[in-house]
Length: 106
Image 1 (cartoon, one colour):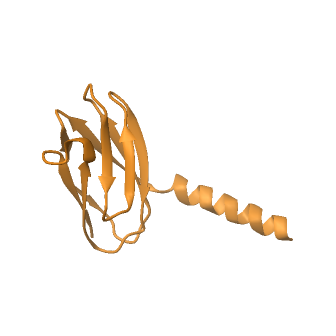
Image 2: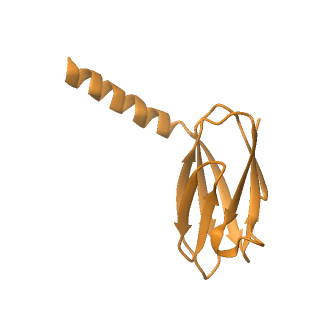
Image 3: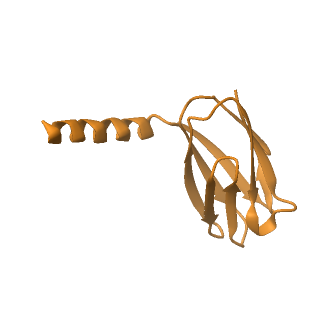
């Protein structure tokens, strides 16, 4: 019975990830696009960050407790949520003064 419950929980967690909404942020010339990303509140989402620059970047959000390096010409996946309705900042920690954006959960 214990293994059945663990297996069921594992399958449900995989299904939750597979059904997460997908969003894309692109980094080019040390700028995020879009600068404002609107997502649904109270849902788990997947963000793919594509770095089109020839230098590494770091997707970081203190508000969302996320920090992940994106290799030059590479991409990463970041899962967030569910989050409450509100505004959450993010930035490239390697170019913090110029590379910022906002996630708006509605």
